[in-house]
Every structure is written in C-alpha cells, then in structure tokens.
Image (tube, rainbow over the protein chains, first blue to last red):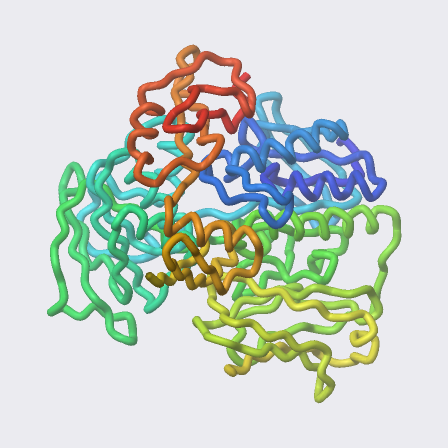
Length: 414
Length: 115
C-alpha cells in the first residue's frame, strides 16, 4: 500500500485544476490517476475554439486549454499515473487501481473525484427500428474523427441540440458531409446561442424543434430515419412523420455523470444533478472525499469546471491540513423555476460563497431571490435565463452569518 | 441597414443590434469592446477561426489538431479546409508549430503536442 496526501481520480480539466490548486495550497504529495494514455480528458477531442475566455483571458481550442493545465501540472512535479483504471474507492479513502503492472493500492488522506461524464446512448431512448451501423453518440463520432482521423459518414441527421450535437454538425460539414437536420425534442435548444449561430446558421443547417427521430431504418448500414413532431407530452404526432435518407445518425441526448466509484464509496447522490451531494468546499457526505467537474454536475463551460476544481483542490488541501471542520452548515434547495442548486450544503460561518444553479425552462428577464425563512440573503437580476446556461449567485459572508435554517432559491419572472 | 446578431465571441452570446449608415457602423447591445468589434466586422467582412486535424505521417492513426492562427474570411472556410485536408506533418509537433503558411491570409498552427 502506497500512502499519499491527495489522490485525484481523473486527469481531465477538473482533475488537473484540482491538483494544481491543492499543490498551491501547500499539499505537495498529490497523485493524478487517469485511465487514458495522456491527461486532458474530453478536451483532447474538442478541437474547436472558444475555451478559456473567462478563466485564462484568451480564446483557445480544447487541446490548447488542456495543454495549459498539463504544463502547470508538470511544472509542479505532480505525479500522473496514466493508463491506469481505478476499480474502487472506499469510505476510508483506499483507492484500488489496475494497470499493466498489476494492482495498485493507495491510501489517501483525501480523494478528489474528477471522473467526468459519459453520453446517454440509443438504448436509453428506446428509438424503434432496426440496429444498423451508422448510429453514433456525438462524442464518439467526435473522437473517431478528431483523434483517430476516421470519416464516420456522408449524410447526417443529428438528434439533440446540446452543444456537442451543434459542434458536431459544424465539424461534419467541414469534413464534407451533408448535415440534413438537427432535431430537438424540446421546444428550445439546450445549446449555447452562439453555437446555434456559428455551427448551424453559418452552414445553413436546419434546426427542427419539438421534433424527434421516430424510427431508424437500414439493415447493414443506416439508410434513413423517420422524424416526427411531438406534442406537449413529447409523444410523436403520427401525421407529421417524414423520412430523411441518411447514412449516419448522431445522438447528442444528454450526459450522465460517471459516478460508479462514487456510489461504491457509499457517497450520497443528488437525483437531479446525478452527482454527489457536496458542501461549499465540494466535499461529499463522506469525510475527506471531494468531487468536481462533470462528475459532480454537467457543465456547459470548461472555464467553470476549472473554477469548481480549484475549490475542491483547496478544500482537500485544507482537509489534509486539519483545517475546516465547519459545523454550521445548512441545506441549499431549489425553489420555483430552479432545477437544482449546488453546493447543496453551505457553511454559514465561512466567507463569501458562490452558489450555482440551473433554471427549469427558458425565461426572459428574471429575478433570483435567495432566502432563509423570510430573510433575504441575496438577489440577482438576469436579462435571460435558459436551462443550457448555468447561473451563479454570490452569497455574502455577512448575510450568511444571520442564517440558521435552510436556504432556498426562487425565480420570479419580471 | 439594420441587423440583429448574436455575438459568438464568448458564451454570454449578447444580442447585438448593428446599424450600417454609409461608412458608419453602430453597434448596441454588446457588453464588452470585443462585442462592438465583432458586430462591426460581422456586417462588413465576417471572419471565423477554422479548426481541424492534420494526419501525422510517421505515427499510426495519429492526428494533430490545428487551427487558423487568426480568423479567416467566412467565405474562405472551405478553401482553408481543402488545404488542411491535403496536408500532413511529421512528428514531433509542438503546440504553436506552423503546419501551413499563409492559407487565405492565416497560418495553420498545431494545437496539440505529438511526441
């Protein structure tokens, strides 16, 4: 058994930023474990630009953003254990992993979970039809094209208008494919507006809202899909069915935080975020185990992943140093118009605390009110709010001090 | 002429109102100076950063990601893609290495290290 101060599971943007923050908070014995041959995580296949504007003040591609953090990790001499898969984490922080050398056992003082998320697959959607080749999750197609240089198809339909679906619509167009349609079952796109502009409008790709893929056709290879409009209950309207000939269907239908290790450690999961329940330091309900990045909540911007990972890295370092044993925590819960709030537990005797949330549907101008009982802790006005964009509200330390009950966030349309 | 645009420079995606009056372009709705610049340029000569991949000839199944060092004219995107598609490179490659020079006014540079 090896002993380490902090073991980080996952070397993507969250794991790397957490490692750097933990090191800079004074804990030098930090190990990152990653199952891939290189660190960088999902950024390695996100070759498009638009990363880092908030965090680093420059516009980078995904690989460049990863490279920035990789250099920071290397500069500090932080150990990276690549090509190594973690099999289990115990509540007393024993991490068991495997690689070509066999089984590793590491006893950590603190563990940071940064495993990211995976894509929802065709099986989860129950799309009727045959099972030909040519049906890919969007991220899988992205990896095949951008990392391995394959061409995945020539005539494409995309189901789901989240950011990955939109980015892949552009990417396939650039590679010479014809993108026939992007279908979105909801009445609005889950992607950023800028991606609708620069990925669909720039290339003349139609976006059909309230529309889904009703059937998949083809025996060996996909030959086409039937698309159809849906009603308010998201049921297919049979009279709107129409056939689109295509050889490729990309699914961009949601991301699932990859929390098998988390559950194995007996850590409590928030049913809405699909990630752990955490406090303001991103510590889970198992003492000394922290979580950050897409394994905690699916983010829209990597910049915010890095911010969150820094909180977790610093929190884990303070935990190892025996600081932070706050016992004045209250619950933070979602009220009207709010889907979830994170962190779910907040220290009322700490410093200023940012809480993050997503709204339930697209809204115009809204006012968020954060209250405990009848006491208003913070308010924030936003010109618009959509489920695809995470919102942040800062709770001032001075206001938090007066709080002794649960905190609730409500949205009010203006 | 008046156009409503969504600024694509950052995820905030401000809604811009751009008015062109002869040689003068007026932008409102932007939250930062970059937005004003984007609005002005978008109605006169829209530009985009193009990102793609180039095959690494001396490594099996390895691609290096690349981008235009500066944005290129939107109308040149597919010309740029043709040039990139026909290129190849020999490892090692470092982030920032020039892969192709002066393609529609921009160099094509690597965005990934290949050892």
